[in-house]
Length: 282
Ligand SMILES: [Fe+2]
Image 1: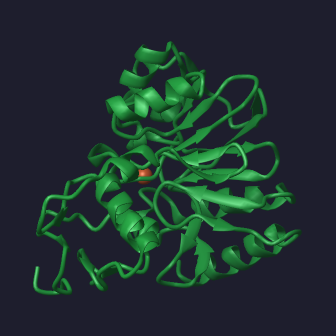
Image 2 (image 1 turned 180 degrees about the vertical axis):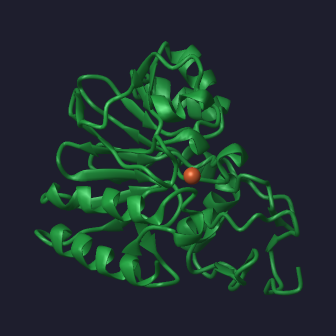
């Protein structure tokens, strides 16, 4: 595409603008509003690795290089540790429109949060981390290859009944709108991006939000996606207000949108501010 800055990396016209590349290599990839493009070729070893991680993560294989490139280091960097016990998986799946998925390492059994592509390299890394016990599916859109991971690792898939048509063999189907505790995870019902959307609060401080709530880079703020609320925006706002009780959140890890660290004791303020803004954009 003509927007690409000339050089080794490029983005082609198959891009679906999921934003995955901009999260792994924000210096090198930009957005036109319709697709991603190379806004600056890598200028350091770190940027080179980040651009390769973006290439590996890209769900549509839309990032290429003009010459043959060794991707082994970037491939082996996933799952990538982003907080104590928390990893981002890369290998974003086309089926989930390139949503990010995560891996939680726990002495009581590891969790996947939503699903990356099922690849040999990632499976081997999960095996080294002693497998997967639960696969928490935030909502119907992001199940991707979860069935393959569940079968391989004998893991239990968790999803809400109202979204369970996308994961028909899920072992744990929740039907209540009450919070549910499993190991160190608290599952909170948060419709209406989808009818059965749920978020996962891990160890009181890590909040996996699926497509419910994220850092919105273009707006430079937290909130929900107005144009990706598939049902009632009013209900969506109520579901954001539910997060107000989670006073110890330190990180927000979404599927779409950007992950973001939260300063100590500011999450209630963040939620209140997001709710005010969401009511304005209704
Ligand atoms: Fe979604």
